[in-house]
Image (cartoon, rainbow, N blue to C red; front, side, top):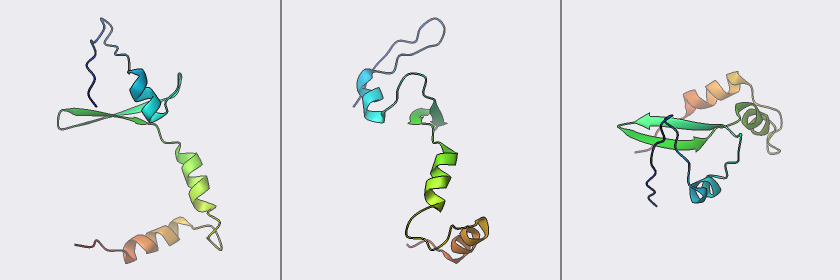
Length: 81
């Protein structure tokens, strides 16, 4: 999907409706611009607090994970070829 838009005098660009719908972004919601290798990615801002609450309260866990538990899991993990 490719869209071309003109930058206004104040440096503003309107995000096309199709893209807003695809990302699920709404007015007043914050988004993130990531710049890498002369490319710009637009993403929804992740709500870190909400993510962590959901992650640490997974029903499969017998008890919430601590940062120490996460560090241990990371230390024990490895990359597959």
